[in-house]
Image (cartoon, rainbow, N blue to C red):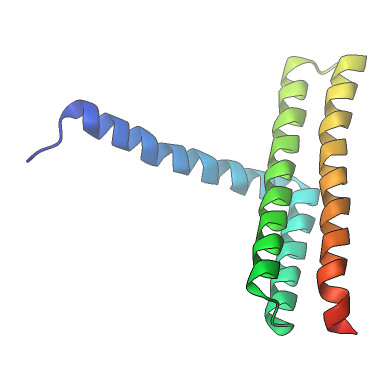
Length: 125
């Protein structure tokens, strides 16, 4: 049985959406120092998790934290680029939008560090 053109079109759009998402990740990694730093930290945390044989529950927590951190950094980048697209001039609302997005990343990063310390310090000691 052959797929109709509508079904094929839907599938192709679905597959293309992954390509667009991957393009966003690659371009953000290439252009954003903070995303690069967070990626390196995720790699180091993953290595530490293997080294210290963390539990399944700890793995789940760490994976959620890492995925959330990278996702928030991508959203922060999207917000910054959108603001820059709308106005190149200084505007208090543009600054507020960028600062709020950066603040969200900071809050999550601090939370991730605290939870990481709670998981890893007992294993280090």
